[in-house]
Image (cartoon, rainbow, N blue to C red; front, side, top):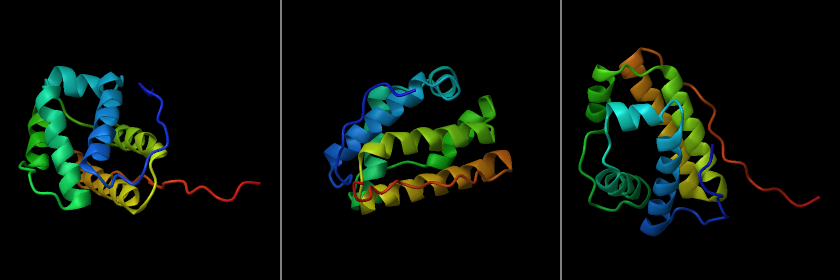
Length: 145
């Protein structure tokens, strides 16, 4: 379920593009039937505080920008202690992430997909005992027929 149409974008090569991606992605996450309750009811995420932190995380990962402070695993472990994650949570998170990135293309998009897959795999393994393995690929437009 997508909250807004995703117009073609660039390569997530600016903080503004990353902030837009984060806003769109977590807008979809918050409204998702499986993930929304984990964020809204269990973690009780303050989106005004959380979105800039997530933008900083992705800006550091993709652009080398300073500013991110946090421990993503610890945050997920705290939520897991209240309401256990399943591999389905991580699979859905990855699916929504890939859907969000459908409008962007380039090396940073590919790096974001790889990083998201790795984060989901590692956190799923650490928290549920089962690593999530989802083929994350970003379609490359071929020549018009």
